[in-house]
Length: 295
Image (cartoon, rainbow, N blue to C red; front, side, top):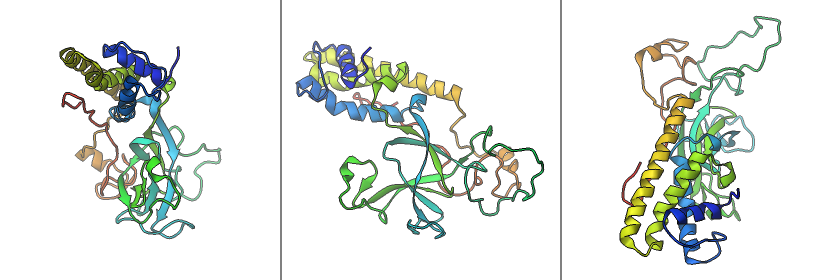
């Protein structure tokens, strides 16, 4: 089966009741023009609407600044109270979390209990983060005018870049990696649930300008919106079954289980302690639809 954006567009035209077949989204016909205007926005919103597993990646971040001044060839200006500032990935649709596992990163957080320098066993040990659950750390996404796009860079084609500054990730994790939802424009990588949601979402966006019978167009639009919502809901349920909850809720018994008790920034449940600004996780976004609803 062919897996091209034009195929998704043709499925959306079928769902919208439009008797037309395109060969390419950029061919210039009216249906192709309407599809092209809606396609990218629908794809991006849908990727942010659930934690789709096919789009999950974990990659190292590019360091922009180190407030300690211990890293050469990077800036030292970082917004308080953060230590490190990283460049927002150009293909990132939604940051899920930044791990802070012991042994993954070089620096030991301030005030953290130090491990013994003498090994407790002579047996060879695997990397200390292997077979451990991932512990998320707090982070914050913002814009920093101290690090604008470099001269000659095509900033209008690169997400997060502009002459006014760059989109950045602020963190206290040294040598940080990030788990995020990646921009995946290739339909052959999509799972069947996302594919069906994309077709329905795209159909709901293009049916009004392309369907001559406006009464029928409204009926078809509402039907496709309901299909898209159902697929998104199913994906969110699947995410809840396959991963941990993204709720950031303070509970007394969880607070006291940290390795240094109630007040210390220990490693009990969350990396780097529970206090401070930022967030541990990013949940999914609501998807907006042509009938004025959001889900």
